[in-house]
Amino acid sequence: MAGTEDITPEQVEREQAVYGPFTDVVRELVDATIRTRIDDAEARTIQDELAAIVARMRTRQLDGAYAVNNRGRHWGNTVVGLRNAVAPPLHIDRESTGRVWSSFHLGAAYEGPPGLVHGGVSALVLDQLLGEASGAGGRPGMTASLTLTYRRATPLGDLRGEAWIERTEGIKTWARGHLSDAEGITVEAEGLFILPRWAREAAESTPPTFE
Image (cartoon, rainbow, N blue to C red; front, side, top):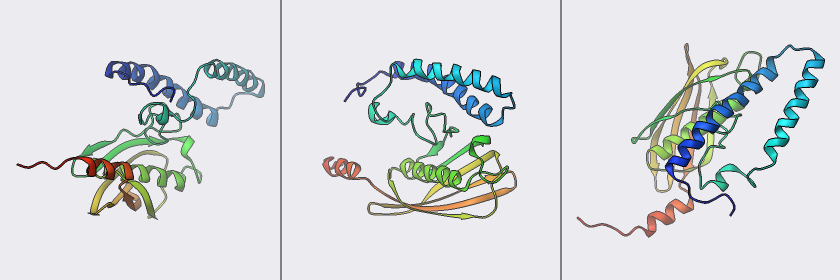
């Protein structure tokens, strides 16, 4: 498959140095697009300029989704993706116990009701955090179910998310988590994650060790 060649850690670091700031500028563009008050003529001029930039970028690009073309690197992920301008992105800290946390900022691009985070965005972020907790605890899983309880509205701005593994049973992992602002918890979530087939097959193919 095109684009799936192995690259060295040095190449990954070089790409991070280039495309991290590159995507940050695109995030700024999204925010500026929502909040600009320029006149009509200026908006049309900038539109033409941006269309030319997009055409330049389209001259060489991946065929399909990012992770498929890059051996599972999650830079295209909607929540944590380094190269996805839709992602805030979240930078997630992890413990091997299956606990994760992240402090982040959601601005104008994530608005639902006026001044508040869209409920679907809260679900998106919590799905990622609960899944990250599952993986951090050595139980990588695909979301089977996700239930949210909206305690109160989540304001746009600085937020914190936390998640942890609650229990495991065979190929199943149950995780819980929440979002909070300076006033406390706004949304709570619980989810069930299923160990994917590839992980089960890898575990079954690993020979036992005897001490």
